[in-house]
Length: 193
Image (cartoon, rainbow, N blue to C red; front, side):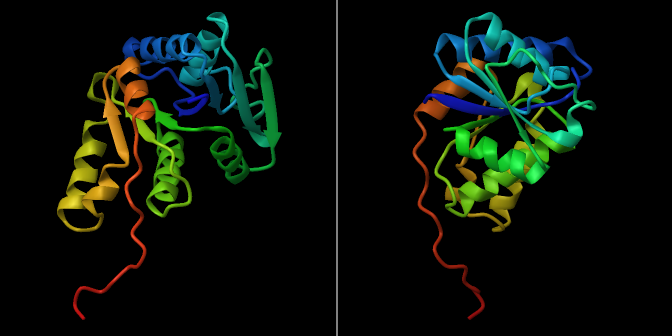
């Protein structure tokens, strides 16, 4: 795996453990010679992971919409910064550049990015791994919700397996490296007929 997109908060979060893990993941990406693809900002966990990768000698490609240039504070020291016109273009460009995806803790924007990429995998639009770095049990409620979706038959169990989770950067990277995509459900059927 040569590139991973990381979705994460533009804030540090309430606990220092979130930033610590962003830095650890950044160092681990650089050590494995994996290019970081991320949202292009210098603030919050976004800035922390980008800085960690670069300080460890790694490559970082940021993708930033023009309208967020000042709000998220464009990172000017990246290997490459790609400017796009919309959030939709940002996600598309990140998905084109990345061979896998990880969500660190973040807010609604992080969730929206992760859910779209997960849904694309579920529909067979890509076959790349989608991981959650479950720092300090941050994603426990989301994992429980996905389990409930599968239990209540709103998602097949094989599709539920697309969501990879681990509590450490090393663990989630190992899972992404060993990922085998499940078969794509070809037809949606009405079980009542």
